[in-house]
Image (cartoon, rainbow, N blue to C red; front, side):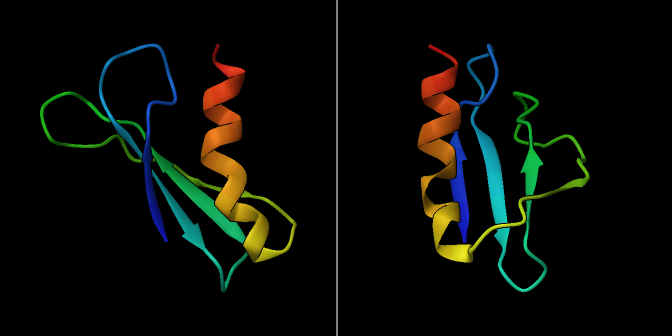
Length: 63
């Protein structure tokens, strides 16, 4: 599953990739030129379905 969200203070869309088989999320911050910075996977240690709520929770925490 791939989700787009604005995760940091810039105006560039970022990507979250849910890796259900390995139980982690890869976060790729948008660079503003159509490319994304490389990131290491983040272990979430939770049921895969809870990944669906990840992007809104991160976005709300930025407010």
